[in-house]
Length: 418
Image (tube, rainbow, N blue to C red; front, side, top):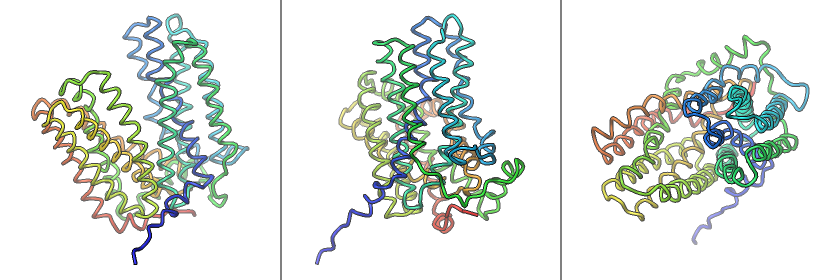
């Protein structure tokens, strides 16, 4: 008798109120980024601000890189409302709403310094919101919910980035920049409402007793694990091949193969966006069955193989069918890998120090990409596009080998509640 495939375990997790809250918090987390980045650059360009000033405004994004420096404060201190996690979330969201609204009344050309200070304040509030939402997600989700929790967070984040990026530019053409920024400030109310409707993580979690413990405790806790340095190496290496290939994908499609900008925008960006979301959702649901290690391994292998699809595209040449396949495959598997990787980071955090540990680990994950990305152009000039994408495939293999070595450690990972 043929066994029936039971889909209910995969769908059950979607019925959780916690998953719904994480989805909308992902939206709140993704909304502010473009308002101090690409959308702000567009506003400045339209109003005639010189290119040197626009370039300097890139420094506004520094808080996202340095957020681990003040994350211990959010572990140590508990606001007098809503609890340790939701209390901080609501503070950052109210700050964001006020900051974005204040940006609406600024004048990029007449008072660029004031706008820079306001944008920096918004970026700081946004990075702080990211710290505490990451901590909240890690603390509140149960083990079987982590994969899909990571996936719906990516969904909310990407939709918000679309709203404050592409949609905001369209709005600005019709209602002006001031009204667009005021609208974005109002949309932040979605995050505030979500925070109020959410539940606080387990009250048994005891915050650090002092700032010294808040700063040193997360490090001591992490390095007390036997394979701590190998786990850190795995964090750096797991997504490295995927990130390396992504550094020059747009340039490859336009300059390497001769696709038009509109074709790249439609296929690479739009299809890539949909495929990434689909992959994250599918991977998150599949993790309920596969568990953490098998998900990391299976999705990591697919992630690595997807780079070879771009190598095939480089060998075939300008082919729309191959382009659609490569973009869909690479983004779909990348989404799956992201769901598993975020779950891995959450599993490594001690919930007493989640804000600090997650901020540090996620910053570390970007370290490898920062160092290898500058070499990409030189590698293309030396080896050509097919050789470059083959090297990005090889770059993914050390992470997979290390993952296999740490199988028992990863299979035994649990978020610790003192």
